[in-house]
Image: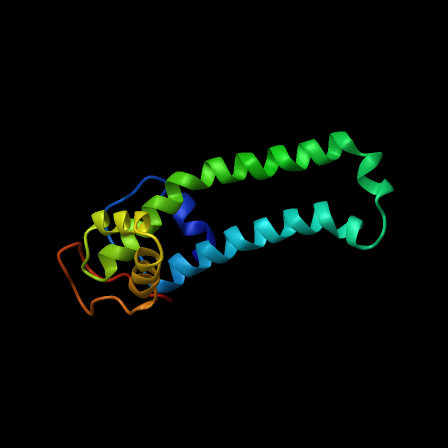
Length: 131
């Protein structure tokens, strides 16, 4: 749990390094929030309870607002942990621009995020141990 929240504690820190567990735990948290929101919205409909949200429009709008606020608050920490993850592989944060190249860029970035970081110290600082 500490790894999921660490990017929020280092909110806009783009310097340094982030181990794989910090990056992938953050990604897992984002996925869990997204799946929870989908389950809350579409779960009753899939169970044939269409009336559930029909009578609770305010609750549904509140849920959308909370998920939207969470997503807005997660943009900067998400970018920061991604740049630090690239730094862990001794790559510049500018490599994040590969995301704009369709398919090839996404595959390359997934490779960068999944590979182990540089052992010891690199140009971006000492290695942060995953404990």
